[in-house]
Image (cartoon, rainbow, N blue to C red; front, side, top):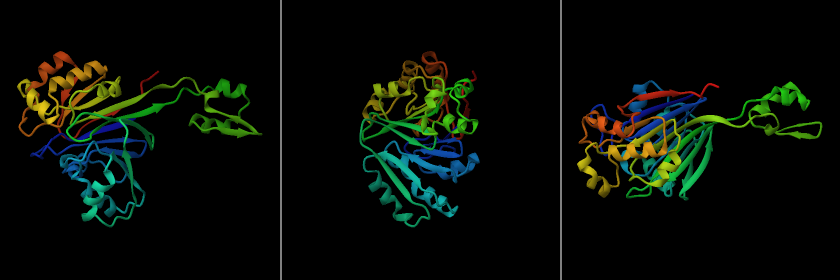
Length: 303
């Protein structure tokens, strides 16, 4: 089970009832944050979720509406007596940018570790999350993120028994670990079937439509995509500012064959996003506008 909450849906500046950009995912006792705009702490408290389990924070890029909430969040986590490390992931320059912000959060009771992205596409593993970071097209270096919970194949007790593997070794094999018994190595592949469908969430904001989004979002259970402008006549402004319209996001969702799309990162001038969702659904029916705090519980498909 993967819990996903869109904490903030605003772009550029916060508004009443609309905090700036942040998304939180929880899995198996671990929490991952994507972006940390102004108001993220308040949004987490309003949702009733905990800061305690946040161990990874991914940044799309370093514009203020995506990272300005970081120092306050780190201080709050420190005041909660956290001692475990927190890993920050983001484009090149992360340690320098975060270091500058930490001038106002200099002493923390936990280490901060940095993982800087340098390639067009990188894959990282963090506490059960398989994170694919991929370059998109904004006016600064910017990444989208696909978060996957992979699911191993079904354990075959018949194969384990045929191989003479004692029951006490079944659990380590099922978890993907090799075991050695009387000098012989047994691998998970010997007792597991083909991988089963996992859970996939893709998050993209601050970009023009590009092929990397379609490729990396393909078959996502949930595609969270920026919709800075609802009006079609804002297309030239979207191109100039390297953002997207609702309709452009809808076409990406259709091409990537995702199950569901949430629109987010609205312009401050877009006060009624729902006014434009009808035409979006003509292109991609399972699209919806979002308000702060919208969440979903994603589960593995039943067999």
